[in-house]
Amino acid sequence: MKNNDQAIWQINITPFVDVILVVLIIVMVTAPMLTKGINVNLPKASSSKAKVNRKDIIISVDKNGVFYFNDTRSSIKGIRDRLAESGNRRVLIKSDKSVPYGTIVNLIDMIKSLGMQKIGLLTTPKRSKIR
Image (cartoon, rainbow, N blue to C red; front, side, top):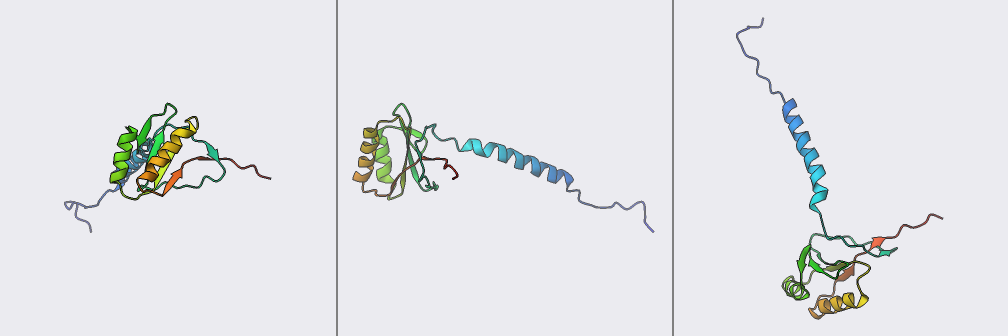
């Protein structure tokens, strides 16, 4: 027989699960907003296969010719100084397709003058037609 004076101890996990689900939804909604990046209209290429790693350095050039070092606006001298301090990491160039060719050639030349040889150009993949 059960004594009515005794308390029954049970853990109710339903509120805990509700809170965890709400936190999960918040993380899922806000995570894509944290990877902002620079708005650049990349050229299209059928051989676009580059995967960006966290260790990679991304130098962006927008349509107005403004330079960015990993999403931070910078001058070409500032980029040179930061590259000189960064060691021999891979450098990816993310340039708007309207930026003059000479600007990108000068940027690559500057990067190579620092002894960095791992340089890539980011592009958008072309959609291939199914035959």
